[in-house]
Every structure is written in structure tokens, then in C-alpha cells.
Image (cartoon, rainbow, N blue to C red):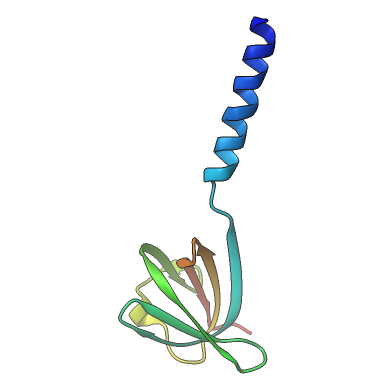
Length: 95
């Protein structure tokens, strides 16, 4: 009985962990602008996409920590999006 109860509790704990874990996705394109907390990039088809930046969003330029204001229009970016907010922006001037 205790073995079954332990197994059920473990299954519930694992299910709760995965349900609470936010899945991250990435988007790649070129940097367009940041307006307030809204990041806009263009994809390979030249379509613009926007999302809100998380308060703790990490930004890097060519592998070094920087500010979003250091990114220039047209720079290649890889954006990590978690819970519909940009949590990481990696800018690269290298092709």
C-alpha cells in the first residue's frame, strides 16, 4: 500500500513539475527596433514580428553582454521566447 502511494505521489510531483515548466522557443531574423518593452524583428521572408521583452531579458552582442540599445537595425538576432516574452536576445554582426 505504501509503495503504491509513494509511486502515485512521485507521478503527481513529476506531472506538476512539467506542467509548471515553461517551454522556450527561438526566433531568428534581423533586429528592427525596440519601442518601450516591445521588440520587433524581421524574419527571412521580411515579415515583422513583435513580442514583449521580459524585465530580466539578457542581451548580448557578438557574444558579449550589452544593452538592447546597442543593437542596430539589420543586425542578425536569435531571440529566446518564454511565456510569450523575450528572455534572451543574441545579436551578431557576423554573417
